[in-house]
Image (cartoon, rainbow, N blue to C red; front, side):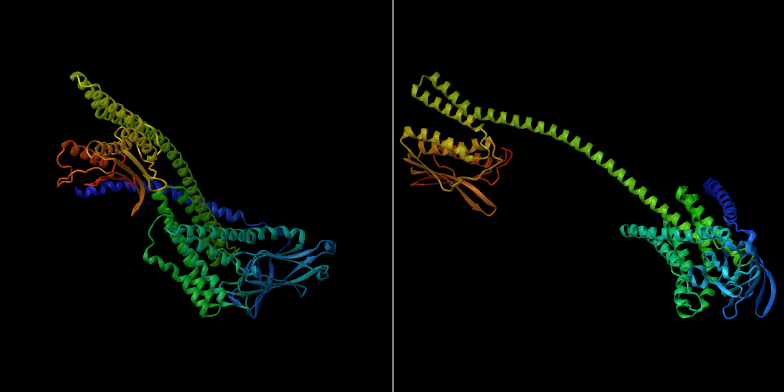
Length: 640
């Protein structure tokens, strides 16, 4: 039962794989058919009216008739190249139009002579000797060389392997009739390939920059290196024997298998797979060709390229086809389909070229792998750049959405802040009301109760008058504490000075007001009315004690700013010349309970403001020193 349960989930999975793989393979089969038909249709049409196909070939000391296109029997013939001899007819009536000799395809190099005079040598053009470009050649025949009637034409074919030499049909006729075919072949097999290589170089720069900016994604760097190798192979001219440069040839030959291995690495990384350890073996053939090319001379590097390089390219293309097919089954995205179709086209072109190399296709030798390979790289690079640009657009869209959301959140925060500010304002107003109620209750309320009690008991008017004055004084204090003084405590102290002077005048006590520093006490932006009323009540209590209990004749008030370790702070001192009072061991006044209670209230008020109160008394008088905090507390419950 367990085996049946284990097999059950695999069946739907296999069905899913088959349902995805079969349509993909059918699509690739259609692409193969379309590629084959395209290769047939892309064959340029040459002017058959001027074709020369019947030649006599002298090769290896033997002369025999041949029909073009023709493959030589020798793979290396530089000292004694095959010589094709033929004839064409020229009429004097055609002398008005210039005549040319046109060679659509050959390998590796040709020398064409008309009536014994050389009119074309492809070795002078480095690009003309590249078998991967199918470069055509055309040369104008000077009119002085042409004879009315039969004319002789000879073609020497230089072959330096490793493939056999090949000569396509030769065309001789009016230049106006041959030139369009030459230009068409040049466009298809030379210009187009150079254009693809130029696009490769541009994409290589773009991909290199993308990799430098995103080091964690090596796929961009791998593809950039592959494109650089392709550009090197496309633009560096190959060596032409006998002036052979083996090192340059090794670089050119090694780049193709190495480039193919890099494309496989790109495919693996592009689809998010881990590069296998044995995958580095794909780079071994290219490395071997490169090292041998540096050490040995030609033709060994070219032979190794034929034996190792070309099969490696085919293996890499097959592996890339497998990678893309697996990605299509798993991912089902446009990138997988696009790359898979491009790989199928290149693989079909590679098979076409191999059939030509092994002379299975005997009527032509047109290599199209490099052209299709460059087109595939350009398509992959363009697709990767498009994906990167799409990712940037998604990032921009996300950034726009993020900005919108931030704005919405900011608006919500502003609304929430406004609500919280309104609540804080209401709470502050409630706290202020509570404070005023408490101050009125503790101060003015007690005085009014005392006045009522005194009037009911029938006391003398002076006593009631004193109680009423005390109540009025307390009411003024509460009203003054509501004024906005902007953190400047000196304004409140100035008002208190006037009231204290008026209070001391009936008792014939002098008030000595001293401001030791120019600014008095520092500004405190956080100063609140309830701070001011506590400080003023402390000063009132100090003056009242001096009047009632100390029998003082002079009271000095000193205001100054001192520098501390954490910054400046203000100090207010009230000193009288009275008899002082005795202090108990706990620091409070001994004897009079009312005086002791007054001193406790002063300390409590100082603590609620965050200030420090210091009391000292002896026979020469009493000194009350109030040290203000550097920053006043926000809550009046700070002191308990």
